[in-house]
Length: 494
Image 1 (cartoon, rainbow, N blue to C red):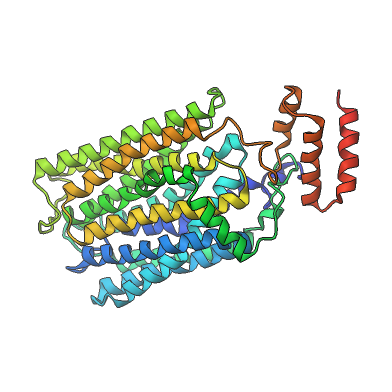
Image 2 (cartoon, rainbow, N blue to C red):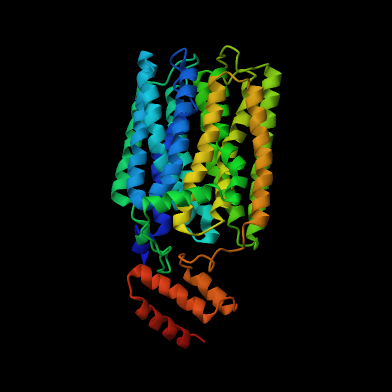
């Protein structure tokens, strides 16, 4: 049984506490990464934007390939080890950009991109796995939103640090040394969180005392085969386009921001991009986990329609702003300030892209998580999701690095967002049931769900005994004792 009382609210074995701790790691790591990416690698060298786009393209190419591998390794290595590996690359990445910004030597920045591509696959796949697998069905939106909100807290903090340090800087210069040093210090803290506080999924216990599932002892061969099966599952192939485009807002928006504005204005836009992500995920959670909307499909439908409309609106707004200001990616860089007339329109569009970056992605992740409750399968789904999303980012940064016109980049994203909405709607109505409980052999059903199903006559005594046997098995109790307990419970219940 799970412990009771105030201390129980903060026990490490509680699913939401584990999710929150991972959120704090995201605060320290990708939160700061997103903040510095939004600044265009500091902007202190003439080639800063080109180097930033090239480094990020390398990073996401490696990230994409590694994510599929991590999906097969996660169930073997455990989240603690994967998160520790994942934390290593981020301070190295910021250090590489710091060195480049001061010396003009890009070698370390490129090396840092390779290392971060490797390590971030471990971090993000594991973080997504925890937000998909640890919550009960009716709280999956909350868990995904929690990670997003805390991560955006880190990104907003990083953006505010840069904004405060450069408030009076009106020329196109790089980020200051104190800002870089602060970023590295914050990111280093994440490794300690992983080492001291992240536990094995087998030890995670819900508030009702039940475990998540009966975990097997997988082999590398079985996990690799499982990744292949998930990757070619028709449901997930259908969702490839929304997974592919769900993070692309960051690449395009940061490229436009870096080329068109001076540092203090870039930092202000960056603050807006991050701060909206405090607001958007909680609002989306209110839709996706809303107990007053009984149909899970309808909740998902409302969520993706809202975020799809925002994504399409952001792209159309950017196309209009580019046209009005006659801007193309091949143009030489500008250094507009927030006092210039060009600022207002992009500020609004940039904020919408921030909502798109979190909200469209969250709706996609929620749909993926709604297809199963099996933790071992969700580990592979998390890896597959990060493969597609990082592949989209790779394409985004490659287009920026190669000088593809902003009109073309924006049109591609607009097309993907629009098609992606249709793909998610189709999956919601064809492949997402009202519940996955009682249909997956190794998933342990929460006690309250089990009780409601029993009172409604939706499960039989044999199924009830099977659920109790799974819980006893995960607790290490022999099956014979589990059967006896199940029989006794069935006699005592009216």
